[in-house]
Length: 235
Image 1 (tube, rainbow, N blue to C red):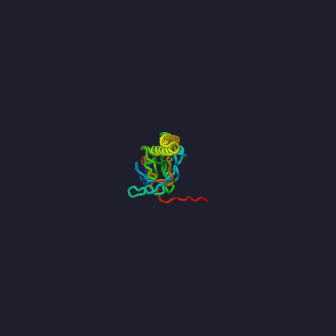
Image 2 (cartoon, one colour; image 1 turned 90 degrees about the vertical axis):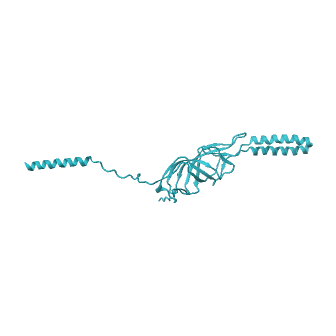
């Protein structure tokens, strides 16, 4: 009887121990993502780029791809966050050619991705902040629209040159009176030529220096930020 009681007690204790062990939570395995070191590129960061292809409002279309490359490494807290030679890809958002009478040529570009030398790709939102390498252009707005400089002076010069030529021809044919008439005719002709011709196009040559502004914070994997390009070898 005593042995039977002892066996029952042992079985009860074993059951309680089993129930306790099964109800206890299993420790979670450490997440690989939680231990990943990251680097942050703040919004408003300006990065100098070098354009890789020519872009002109004469031939560009909305949606055309844009390719550029970082010209200098960008450093945060003594760490290179964007190495020199990182590819930047974007697209043409809007194109407008110069008008015959008014309206200057405009070009809007947005940058969409960043491809590190290692092949690591990060999505971003970037706009053109400045075009120090492009002549006769300026920034129109905070959206990043590049605008051709005004040509009012050039068209006025064309009219003046036409007036001068007309005056010479009039003077030769009809003396002083003819000079006045010829100047008027020549001025009108010069002005007409200026009005018939389009305004100059925005043209960015390969190698043009462009300053990109990153519009929103970008987080990158520190282990994949490299200054070396990975070469993939296939059999």
